[in-house]
Length: 337
Ligand SMILES: [Zn+2]
Image 1 (cartoon, rainbow, N blue to C red):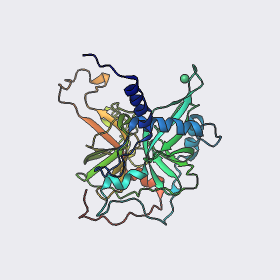
Image 2 (cartoon, rainbow, N blue to C red):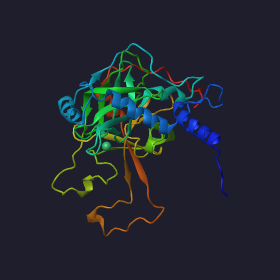
Image 3 (spheres, rainbow, N blue to C red):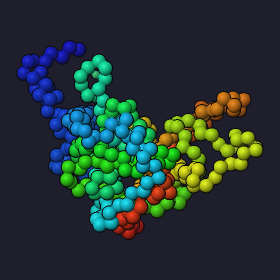
């Protein structure tokens, strides 16, 4: 069937296309209480917002990030004790309470073929103090030397990252500062370590689906050296018998595995307890079907036998980076999830 468009209806279609990117949140008359995101528009906003900030000398480049990570390893950040962090209440569900303090993290760069800025890979992060300290993964800020980094909040505001304040590359966590342009921003509190079985929620940006909520439970805590993303890490059982397994907080961070889904783009996303306190941060996935060469004789898992482990930065690592953090309001057990 052929559809013929008159020039008038065609111009109507074009006008609609041109106007639609301007509307990222549905009008208040909508029955949907939570924010409604237009991913295409937000990506456009992030690119153009960062491009506008990219020529400033203050914006963090990939090259400077590497230097500042090395210079701030082991440094803890003292946070102000004054104000109230975002938290779940009787009236506000966890998602709606925390979304304003969860950010997307990315960079812009110039390719060799044109003069435009391009948007780099996107990760996640979260605001931990109203004056603009943001926590994310170390691997999220590991970018090519010429990249210029920044964050975007859920209202489409874009802020330049200006420096690395504290870093734990082994624990895959960094604290960076953003230029809030004088604004006080909503922020999150870090809670105490949850027990296995505790329900947890992740708000992150998997494959460009901005501010996506997933849920699960804490499934395990373990100690190991940092592994590269989605790879089988070395385990002590493979070490020669003569060398005793390395243990202790000094050499191996504690990681927290959870069952909430996440994938590429979620890195640096906060893991919440039911009260809306941060109790972990997305770091990587490890797929059980990946086999090391020396295990080639082992039976390979059959289809359906694969687990994707979701390994997160633990509160132990976060508390080392963030000291003197304000406590969240006491958890209201009766509040809605
Ligand atoms: Zn280009």
